[in-house]
Length: 305
Image 1 (spheres, rainbow, N blue to C red):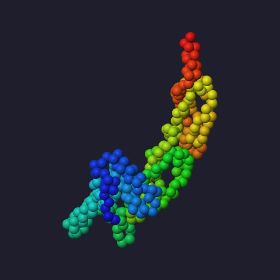
Image 2 (tube, rainbow, N blue to C red):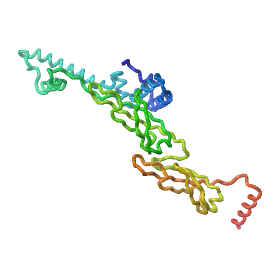
Image 3 (cartoon, helix red, strand yellow):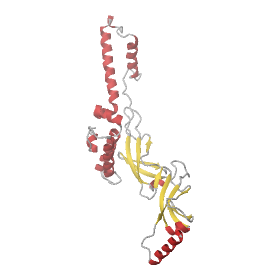
């Protein structure tokens, strides 16, 4: 497989910050997402490269290895250890050949034990044949864009990751920026090693009039002056419908009320909901008629008398 320059894939400089890398990935991932480019193989390939690039460069440890080892970044340290191990074995063989009577007298104490431990650890027990070291496959990352309404209920969704369709269940109440792991849906293992994992980051767009804080919701409701002064009933919106509220006479501006259980679902707790907090904002009437001005003037005189 040809070497892929992940910096070029994301269109960033090698000195780019983590924030710049994340911003570039999100912008390009949305553009080339398979859901927006159905049956476009080039977009699918580009999306795969973007995920790979983000997986490496957005992780400080992976990025450090990539900058040091390039295309062999995933196993660079293992290769380095293997190279050092081979050099040590070569030195030990040289010591053996130079030892008295060509025996193993050149290996003493820990060196002797290390030599045989290295040999036997790399043998499969059949004629001393070496076996290749096993490595876990590459982890994949992807971002899933949803709306707040999408995550109000538990539902299933199909993702396309590196050309494969994966059907997952998204639990109600998942939060913006939350990351979940799907074990075994990453890259193939090397030499029989286990598959990597898939990490999904949720990007949730709040396209409602509610502010969310975990499982609680907050909203502001306009209250006309007359209802605030005299009291009465009003109908307000909740996330899953409308409810009628009784307003006490003399309600003040910025009064807060709590509607228990009318908030957002609690993540992975069936039937559990947070609360909805409503703040009343009293609106002052404008463009008063002559009659209304007369009445307000009369009220003013009464209040100051």
